[in-house]
Length: 168
Image (cartoon, rainbow, N blue to C red):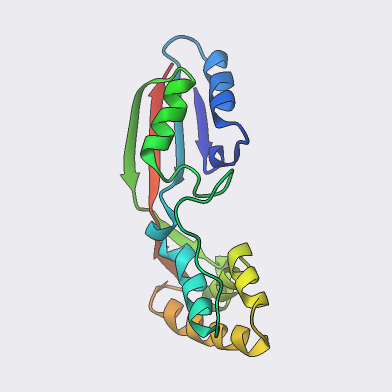
């Protein structure tokens, strides 16, 4: 069996990687992995960029369509995933939607979630287009928005992932 949690989207050559995995499995061997659905289905990822974009006078345009190359959302399109797995020799491909919650910021509550949100690479690029006041205001807004997602002492947000299974 081959199992992955949020890792297979980073292969430079996914067809070759899944072909190698298939060759390591016996006939009937199983593949199971979890990957993110498209970014727009994951508000824990889009909220910070949206907030910063709204604060900038002339923000760069948001990316359109799927991001090219290896990235966290490279397997968001199920047709793309099926094409890769089929080309690599996997059969009985099944893709199911799941919506787990994400705990943001670890044990640091809202402050930790805000720090995590402002340290993502996409948000850092946007913040570089503004001044320090943009970051300060983004912290205030995200603090308010994340407060509505607190469960106990943790910021919990829904996410959207695919559970992909197949057989060799």
